[in-house]
Image (cartoon, rainbow, N blue to C red; front, side, top):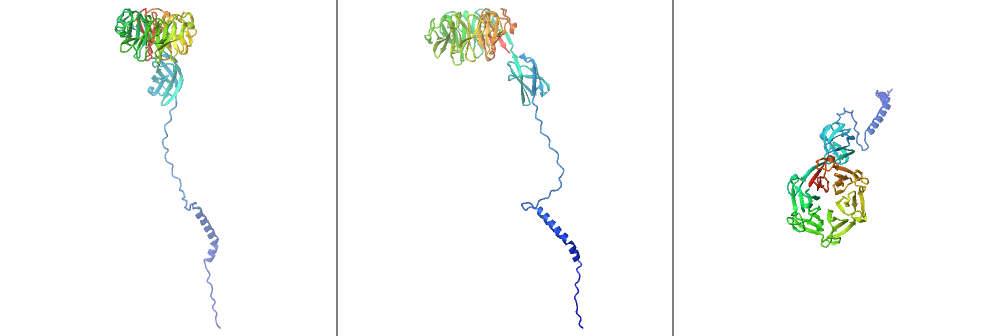
Length: 463
């Protein structure tokens, strides 16, 4: 009997184990693939996993704090003269005085003391009226308007004795100084009427003779031999040529800076217009010259013009009133109008270059009254000029005062008490003895006044 050998399958001991973990294996595989796919970026690069955040660094320093703008609440007093102390109250001022800048109408002032809320300030000279501006570390604020009160100090520049002496100050002598002008160097040019001379007074009071011998007559030529006949008026052009209203010779004379005297216009007495070599004047006196070298002349009741070598009549005062006998003073306003006085001296007039004549100030009554121009009173006003600010200055002779007409049309008294005397002083404490002629140096603001009765030149220093 043969035997059949049957091979026995050896049992796999790991199979049950593999079978048992197979579901978990595939699950783990799927999870791994999903993690691999999610770890890839869109560009295919693996995304880097960020680690835990580190500690933050220290904060940097903060920038500087912007300066706070100042404010101005008040200024007290709100009107004062040069050198006065005022207090500006506000906020955010620098406590170091030099770090605060204060301007009065654009004129820098001195800050003498400073706190965070108050500035003590000295009013600067010639500040004028306008807004106060405070600047602190680059920040500026405009405060209220401050009214500047000008100070008018009257002194004697030269003369005081009747005679004919060139000298300095009160040692000099005049005889009826009647006409006055100021040249571009600040020298005062005087028509020394009864001495038949044209004199010059420097700002320091040194008096010299410009032209004339002292004898009366008519003669052109070198200044030292030229003759005049009681010349009452002078004016000066931008080249410092002096023009003389030589009324009794019926001519306007010219004195060059080189010292030569010639006849500028006029021949014999009359009213004929035309070329300057043949034109006639009745009695040429006060003159004014504009920026284009046109000359305007007071010639009795007429205002005459000299332009381009020809004489013409601009205005006849009789057309305004038959009582107007002559014009006795003339000046040019900033707008080109002529400012005039007549022989009555109760009004101040305006005349345009087109010939329009109006009453500028005065009520027509010989009296003394300040106030609005239309109601103010003058008494025998004889001299007039206009300063750089457009103020009209009037020598109010019979009132013994110097009056001012502001551009806004208000008349006030700047010097003189009303008593006829020669007394120096400030403002209305000073006294004049029939002030007649007046001129202003618009570079310095100083005013000069003639007193024929005292043979004296007075100076008003404006601060």
